[in-house]
Length: 436
Image (cartoon, rainbow, N blue to C red):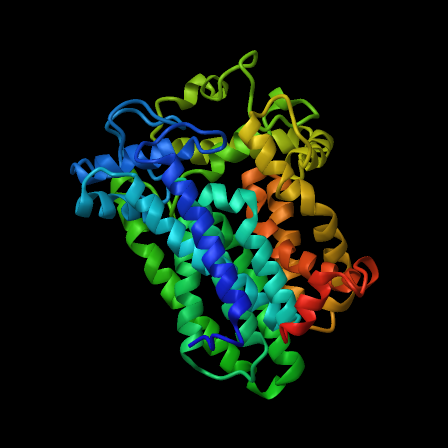
């Protein structure tokens, strides 16, 4: 239980976080529209209605990325689709209800988990500052109210990192924390399978800490990782079986890696990546070779991945330059004529305002990370950034990194604070008197 007086700041932050997200959910209302950066919610909404109507995971008409009407799809998160379908089944078709529930859940969990990570790796004040920034971060507020995987997925990543951080700072032992880590991994990967690629890094980090500090007990870390892995496998296997029955071929979880890799590295980009092809360029569907179109979704995904790897083999220099060009799309902080007013405002009032502190904090804390458990946070930032620079970069794909670098921004702000804020400034006195 939170002690009210001792934890008044985190309570204020949580109330503010939930309030802002609920207000946004109410503003978006009981309809599902194609708002900037939220096209996926149209798909999840339509798919949930189909599942609820008894048609399974399919669409009633030809759908993105190249799924014929009535044919099975594995392109979208099963877990999030079931979340929407379950709520619609209980209360009828009212998109506002899952919006409100999502706003409350992530409004509480995201700042709390960021606070926990800041506290575990740095100190309580860093956790509070980072949680406060997460609470008012425009992108997080916006996506908390949209019917997409983003907010739950970021929350899942924070849960994985928080559980791993706790385990990494304790003497290795078999406990329920390994079960919680397995559940956190399962939820996160069922929302977006790309996080699977980080598991070897996460496991290696936990084993390294165990070997470094408690060499004699590394077997307990191995046993704990085995428990977490069994839980993860158990969560994936039912969908693998479903996919084999639907497509008559092996698909571990989702069919989206091949499509993304093919389109993200297609020669149409040349040496300069375009995050979203414009109206004056071919449609994404038109880029798929004619001979692949008779294939089902799973077969096409695999074939497109092979074609994408062929682009790299044919011109590796172009691939390296193209990957580097994604930096501008991934770290975009300036307003753009290609974006609407809402998008530009969200960008400027979140990443545009805080990226200098994120960058400073990353390098300040990196210099010390080799001697602390905070290395896990830096490994995630580097891995997640790298994987998207090599495949496909969008601003919303960077948001999990933002959640972590806000912790580092908190550390930077607190280190710079005494030099930037006069001693007599009222906020400094208020902070000092709070006992934080």
